[in-house]
Image (cartoon, rainbow over all chains, first blue to last red; front, side, top):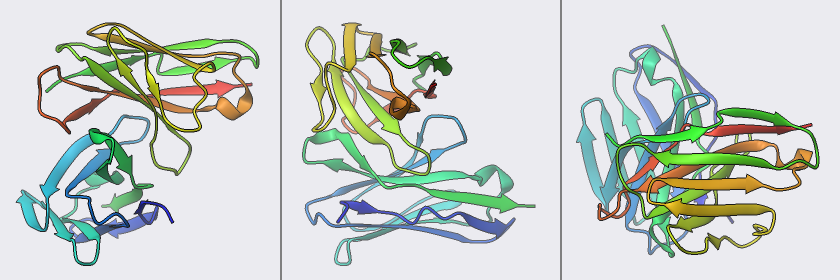
Amino acid sequence: QKEVEQDPGPLSVPEGAIVSLNCTYSNSAFQYFMWYRQYSRKGPELLMYTYSSGNKEDGRFTAQVDKSSKYISLFIRDSQPSDSATYLCAMPSSGGYNKLIFGAGTRLAVHP
Amino acid sequence: GAVVSQHPSRVICKSGTSVKIECRSLDFQATTMFWYRQFPKQSLMLMATSNEGSKATYEQGVEKDKFLINHASLTLSTLTVTSAHPEDSSFYICSAVIAGGPSGELFFGEGSRLTVL
């Protein structure tokens, strides 16, 4: 079993839709959860991070963590074509906060 | 924000040759940089941790003699793929941590796509 599982998609939605992206993880010791956005042929950029359980909102983006289910989500409201990218969840490994374990990434396409 | 630059962005080489990829932090110093490999539709896999002035730490299964890493200054780390073979074709990405900055805040380069013929 992989430590972090993420459905690679692709996910195609119309502009304005609410998007839900999800990851599951196996290590209950994980406390810090990140979402990265990666445009085609570019490196990832940090979108949001959360610590422990609960929700965190930043504009149109909401990150949610359910530690009891080992399940994290990223919601995008009012999705825009510019949101089309691959979204990767990531968690620090036992090797330290800078050594991240990434999900496979979900490819999202928002069409006008 | 902090900028990390990779060069070249794309390289094609013949089997058996060596290829060097550079990772530079443009506006900050980075005592630690990380090198990843990403195959199509797969996640980033950490290859090694590059520490300025010391030997790199390689992840399990990564051949240190094949993937040579040098971190000679606080702004530059290089990855050399030696005697490249077609199976080494991949997207190589580096990330950097700001020296003295918060843990977990990584800045990624734009990646280098290697194609070995």
